[in-house]
Length: 200
Image (cartoon, rainbow, N blue to C red; front, side, top):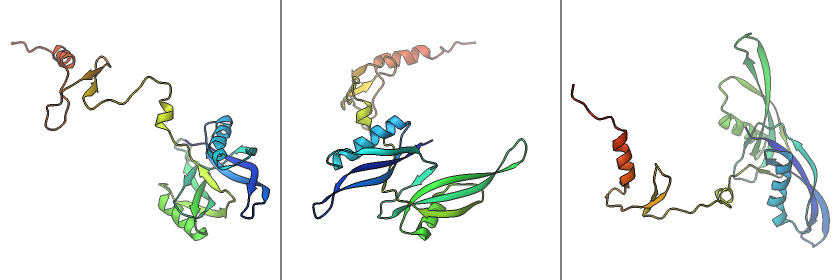
């Protein structure tokens, strides 16, 4: 489950006339901890800000889901309520969730939540409020970053990893379908593992 953090950032902004002005802007960022949220917001925003930035507020957000769309809409916070039944006691409990959705207006926000919310029980949408959030930064895995410092390299076209030893081996692809044949060691191991047929 994603953990979202509200993050307010203060920095010096230069307007169109060249005047400098201190501004504070709110963002929402996905991270596993406060320290990671702080690190990520610096990494994301600093390339676009001259003079550095200061994080004035960092707090956990009560957001369960984010519906983003590639348009110029604003961010709306939508309250969702539904009843959940305890299977043991059969008591009903009211559940409240909050969704952040980018939309053109309140009606559009309602429609987008209706279209994208996968709830199998009846629910209500008691409130839809526009927020001052400027942007949302979900966690995006960077495969190159994850592999940094590890002894890895891409396989060549005529290479494969032996399933038994884990070693990289050169292979010849004579199959017209492009399917790599088993190596000798894999073939021998497969033969050895098969039970021999004995006559009754």
